[in-house]
Each structure stands twice: as structure tokens, then as C-alpha cells.
Amino acid sequence: MDLQGYRLQFGRKDVSPLATLEFAPQERQYSVGNIHRGATYLFKISAKSRGGFGEEAVVELNVPENTPGGYPQITEGSMVTCCSVQLSWSPPVLAERNGVITEYTLAYKEAGTREAPQELRLPPNLSSYELNSLKPNSAYDVKIRAHTSVGPGPYSPTPCGMASHRCAAQDCWHAVYWVCLTIEYNRQKMDVDARKLKAYITGLRHNSTYEFRVTCQESIEGGPRHRVVARTAPLMLVKKPKLDIYAEPENILTMSFPPLNSRDVK
Image (tube, rainbow, N blue to C red):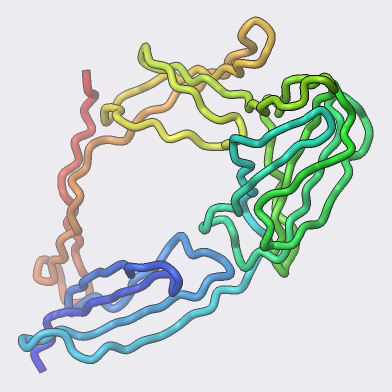
């Protein structure tokens, strides 16, 4: 058979479509990164000849579970009355779930007190819950975490705190609001939900240095600013390295990469 290469299809069994890669006949190994714990992966590989691709060899791989690497996201639009709070949430993102969610722990306490938070264990099919018997005209800190069969993950963070409008008994319905962070850079501003740990900033120039200033909007007098200086990567052509099997002796393979422009962008 005139072998012309291989085709590999792989990915989570419960997520489609599968990623597809093609390899030269000389390539015999490939490492897959960013594997999700607790997931089942599907691998399909077939050889290519002049007549096309042959029959696929199929393998399933079950990755052991771990505790969740992320936390549930409490969604906006939660409602508060004089004596109750209605909360809704979504499970941790798929890459951080690390297995099947078996339960949630919802913890809450009155803000500004040293009392230990009360914890409620909730079934995995719930995505909302109403906290009752709360004190009127009070603010509460609320957080939630997810569990797998291995154990619990981290609680949802409150970087600048979760606040509610203080409700009098005669004025029951008010919206819960969430404190935001402001990121300033290159004469631009963007607001970020303070519950999130990451913010993606697009439209930056390659190979350039940026200064980012992060401010909590709820802090006194604008709050302290956190300063971060970062440099974007040089522009590199998205092209697979070329394999040259004739440039060196038989026991050496030469990989040729596309040129890299490392000059500063002005």
C-alpha cells in the first residue's frame, strides 16, 4: 500500500464535532492537551492511500473524575424581598466541571458579621433556590459551590462583595445588583462582572506593551487601582511546521518553522 498519511479525529464524546488533524506518513505520535477530568474521549484514526482513507480504528478513553476546578455562576436577575432572596445559577463551565455534578452547597450569612455561614446541601438538578427568614433591611453574602463524587470545588468568589438594596418591610421588591470592576487601557474602559476571575480583551496589536488598571467601582473614592503591564505575542503565521527528512542523516528529522516577526510595533 502506498501510505500517504493519517487522519486523526478526537474530542469529548458528548461534544461535537470532533477535532480533525492530518499527519504525514512519518509522523507516529501526537499529544493531546487540555484534557477534561471526568469526561469520555473518542479517538478515531485512519490511514490514507491513493484511494482515500481506509477503515477507522476507534478507541474510547474514560478520564477519572476530580473535584470541580471552577464554581457555579450566580446569574443576574436574582430578586430580593424584605425577608427573602431568590437566586439562580448555572453549573461550572464544562472544562472545569471535572465530572458529573452530584450536589451543590449554598452558603450565606449576614454581611459584615463574624458568624459562620449557614450551609445548605442542594440536589444537582436544582438551578435556583429561595432563601427565606432573612432579616429586613439587611445585606447578605451568598456563595455556592459544586460537588462531584470526588468532593467539593471552590466557592463562587465575591471580589468586591455582593450587595443588595436595603429593603424596608413596606417596600418589598428590589433588584440585587452585582459590583463591577473597571479595566482601563489604551484610553479605553470596560466593565467586568466582579464574580469572574478572567477577562478577555480583544483587538490588541501584536508585539505591543499595554498597561492595564483595574478598579473596583464599589470602593471608597473609586478604590485602589491594580496595575498590570503585559506584552502581546509577536505575529506568527498559523502554519504547520514543515518536516524535511532529506536535510540530515537518516536518524535525524529537521522541523522548519515559519518566520517570526519580533520587531516592536510602533
